Image 1: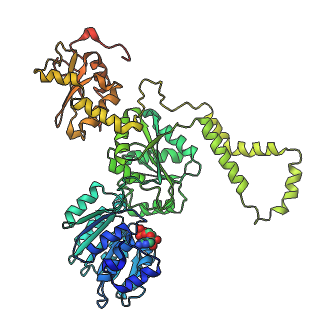
Image 2: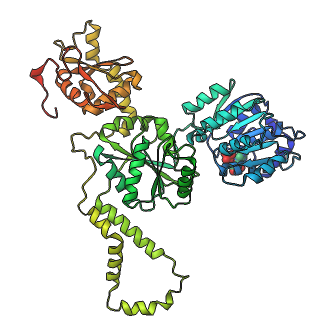
Image 3: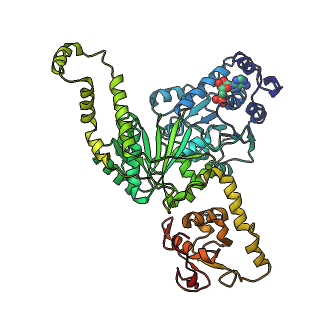
Length: 586
Ligand code: AMP
């Protein structure tokens, strides 16, 4: 078993870790410390919180800092104020037997004056959140000129919160940086990009499994039709009386319109989008933070950097196109060890996109039933009654009035009192939901495509076979030469579609997309030939029309899909085989 002595760190640090009860280094410490002690090697450590990563960078930092030089030499950047304080606390414990080294925490939401005073004391290690650090740089209260070591802790979280520009600014403005140490639980593409741009041959260490999902988030989705999206959103909000959440829309206009509509209907909500002035934005954020606003509706850009504790729900009014954006959004909840729920309102036709997100996000998404009007009323009713029962009545001078009340209510039963209270509170609510319709898109509905989510791995494998030649028949025809399968006598049509790899499709996702849209089984497909802008799909003649009907004229990422029989030369929908038009639902 490796020991801290064996790692070569200063005896005074070992004395401190001994006292803390650290017997052996953890895996990340064992691998990181020898590398980091050099002070000149860039480093990437993929490790979760709880693996001992604070000591993995804290101990070597203390070992290599020059205690005699009284200026900032090391900068630790981390996403939240809580983490900032925790890191400083641990470093303080580690340096218990070292004198002349001081460490300071600078983060938003606390007096900047006091932090500036602390910085002036000649600290060597600064632990900061990105926003406050930039603020201090702009006020010239901190000088990064002499910083030798930059540690980015929970880098993925920082990027999730929209601090990418700030991180890059910090890396660009530390000219004497001798090494950069990056710690992250996951390795999204954005972090790769940052590391490529600003780090030199980083040594990469992975501890445990690099997971891409935050296990504290329950991912749920509701399938409805496009025209019921708004109504579904309302049901979800109403079904969660204690909700404290952020709703994401794709456009400013949507954010604005939904916010206005919900406000008119009595909800505590406001919108955050790019058209607001800084003052307006601060006001909305302030109200949301102190919970005067229960709901915030935001575009992705406007929600950058939001770090609000205790968000219970994130709702995707519409799915983002990008998996990374989904991750950014869902990351607003389930923070600091708390549980969170990320809800997506999905249109049946978006299931293909959803499945991609599910797969890449590497977590299971749960399909939920959109609550009925009755469900909503029941939930609201009991929530109100719970509130009623838990109301604190110990402080007011209620005793003075009780005799009068008792007299007034002498002939009214307890049940009647409850009914009246409920009626006052819920009459409008009950009326609103009285004849409410079922918003779910049900399986029996022909247009529904249930996710084949649970079997993603398998589905994908099969899909790949379908495309890449697992279907021996279609492939063999090619092997025999010629394109007889398309439009000829082989029973296959060849369809043209104006979608290709430029639209972000890979073969598997493209196959899934056309199958989901058309509700056809993969067995009807032959070879798929994808180019940048267009693709050609071989499909059994009997199924060709259904596919054309399902895709032609529909939208993908705002662009109209054009699909037609590639060999007929005719317009979309004309396959040249009118005798075999599929029957409805075939
Ligand atoms: P961290 O991942 O840095 O948040 O550390 C998680 C917890 O593990 C902290 O409470 C540390 O004090 C503790 N810890 C770190 N390194 C060791 C070690 N080598 N032995 C025992 N506990 C440790």
